[in-house]
Image (cartoon, rainbow, N blue to C red):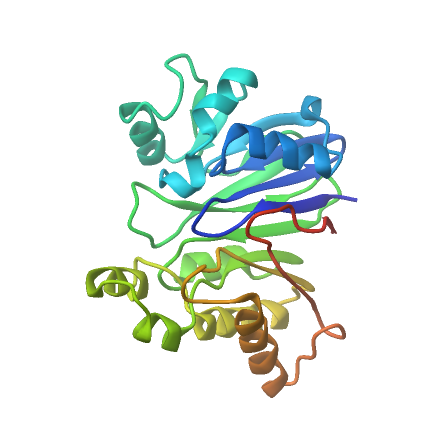
Length: 262
């Protein structure tokens, strides 16, 4: 059985870990190295099992702790060519870092990792569909302004999906953010609103997903309650009941979430 844990999630920093067959992959390192190592220890994840780091994109809330972490744990880093170039050019990784372009299904740590493009204002952002040695599939899609066919095709069929539910539309519209930032967030290359996430969650459950994890909630423009209510309410309207047809977790912002087994 494989495990997934959202260590941190939100605009203040993101990091996740996937484990299967005695090996683990870190996805993003958007908090300090110390915070990541502490969270892994809290969830009893042995550092010796880590065999690589998947990076979705180069924004600071996804790579803040990467440089220091790689000095302590010199693991290979997998990302798009654009992301890796940005990390190197902006000195977000050590000069000697083992940077590997992932552009097609690749076996890493005994898992098949399939990258897919996500629509976000970054240099080649990716989501990942991960198939474990047991044949279970996990999809990760965070920081995306809208659902493309590529994103939908990659996620549908995954039994467990980690998907963004970044903002409540009313909260964003009436909140204190400056106009340009509101426009960026709500753009097709910004973030997913709760209703947009809910519509995709319905497609996921209808295609076989049984575990949903809502991630990257805005601290200013969303709450766990608003996000979960938007998803469960919408799915309920379409005949899908939480705890009967699927389970739902909202990833915690500043501490490790509970481990999900899949």
